[in-house]
Image (cartoon, rainbow, N blue to C red; front, side):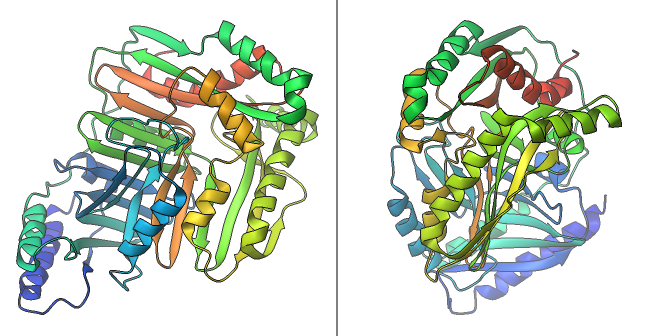
Length: 452
């Protein structure tokens, strides 16, 4: 690895910071950057000792970010409205005109209840140091928060953070670990009861879809490197978003999610309906046959159409134009394939990212329809706290923002791996088939972790 070249680029950033001490501050949040050498970013991140540690890899594979430290931490532990979050972000955003400054983080699936320690209901970070890749171009960035800190001490803190950057080491090699115990919440008996409640005609008439999920807790007796796991997952499903948030050494949330919540470029918005699932075939012929069966399956088609219609309806008041695919296509992953419809909108002037979050999150693909009654059922009946699973993770930026729905995810803690999977329950759903869908969705991560 080109350690020497990277070291020189870090020194170049320090020189810029020293020069900045002699110049009056023109903006209250600033960013300095230098071009740098190519580097495996996830390996670099895993080698660092500063927290938080954040990783983001776009689904289009063009963009990748590894970030460490924090010069601004925006966290809400308890229930917060999108309006409060919007106000806080807009105040922060007004501190700079630099369109490259990004706040990385996420919001929980259900922001009305308690969430995981350290993560909160909403948590966004302006990192101290970022290592970004765009295509084949790499850059190092340092962010400065003069709004909350003294000019000279903030620069000194940034210099100290750069001096504490560690050289990248190779990731630990993939290794299967021993599974000591497994617990599912809800278990199958409870799952069957919940599915039957949702498909009961009296309930289903007013709430046509509820996305039920399951927490699978796996006890282990050896440390698990979350970044190695995420890198392996990335290799299995390269056409997914990959991201990770490690606010402290205690727990790491990683995801290899196929689903985009939204991408905004100024007033242009891209989103999608991703719902309806089947497995992959063992041969090309079987794979095509399964895909065709999924396209023709009434239950899955109805589920995807419900999601599409809801998203279009929610975006219409915010947009000058909304267009959505009439026909579903197949989105293929390593072990499963989904029905997919692309949705594109031109937003009205003044519509902000938090209005989009409020309109789109949680989507019917992870919550249900109508949102309020489906969420109420999940909150009262599912039996565990989802936290950031099925939440929205990504970044805000003045020019563009991007968020993924945090499905296909894991929360890694000392001695325990928490895995999550969900299935859309509508009229005609079969408890056993839906339970098997949960197993299919865990197949990739389970094959990385354990000898099956």
